[in-house]
Amino acid sequence: MAVVGGGPIGWAIAWRCAQRGLRVVVHDDRPGSGASSVAAGMLSPVAEAYFGEHELTGLLVSSAARWPAFAAELTAASGVDLGHRTEGTLVVGLTADDLAEARRLWSYQQGLALPITPLRPSELRDREPALATRVRGGAVAPGDHQVDPRRLVTALRAAAGRAGVALRPVRVGALSEVDARVTVVAAGCGAAALTGLPVRPVKGQVLRLRAPAGGPPGFRHVIRGYADGEAVYLVPRDSGEVVVGATVEERADTEVTAGGVLTLLRAAAELVPELVEYELVEAVAGLRPGTPDNAPVIGPLPGLPGVVVATGHHRHGIVLTPVTADLVAELIVTGEPDPALAPFTPDRFGKERTWN
Ligand code: GLY
Image (cartoon, rainbow, N blue to C red):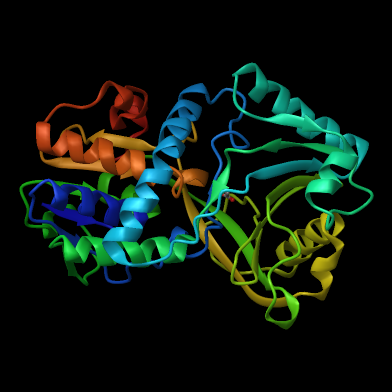
């Protein structure tokens, strides 16, 4: 079988399928260079549970529950430390309006019985003294963790290679160029041109800062918040890196703009003032593969027998990697789609598909 796309979704599917006895070739001329090379790696089934996305939330919860075992198995299989951290996530609001916005969402999440608990400002600062004294309040989502996406791809490539997966370093312009009985399209935004599915680029600009003097960042939780109406997240790594993200722009370019950097840095420093002392080491932009309902597209492609799609993961590619790989491998090996895939099938877009 062939997998088109060497991001985490593609490599994880290839690894799982190879473990089940299939001969797999991944096709990608620049593996690991897409959205995952920019992503922060938040494993956030709770803080990213949004209004009206009930089925997507269920898939996020299912995949997040698989992450600890997935990380342990992958680390053992690859010898690569994934930077998987489990301190949890704080959701905070800088002003009264920001806090009201945050509270509106976490009240919805509590209504779904997801684990998120409001904290008083003093409790927030006990957990993270680096938070600005102006921060009005927040909540903790203890089950929202993080992983380093660049290390994840390195680990998946190594584990897949050890399981017998080969890499064909080519850019696939059409599915007719791929010679395989089964082809999985895991090409992120590139899936639109290959399949005609309505997958569109959603640009995200992201910064990487580094704590002074080679030390760790001055906070340990992932911090997500609103600061004067701007949404921002801060992801601290053991290496001293802090990822600051992200803009959400309906654009297809990957230029870093002064406005994007300004907006992210201002919001980040309002929540954690010490960040102004950090080194700015990287500013990049990536393209999330978005869909009309913000949910991924996973399953057989109608009209093209032997083609399975796994794309459209939008803001959730890293957290959804384990469940996507498990469900696609099961589908390919047994020929039977798991009922969990029903809300995410490619045929749900009907006429919105532009080519087959
Ligand atoms: N999941 C975070 C982002 O897409 O920016």
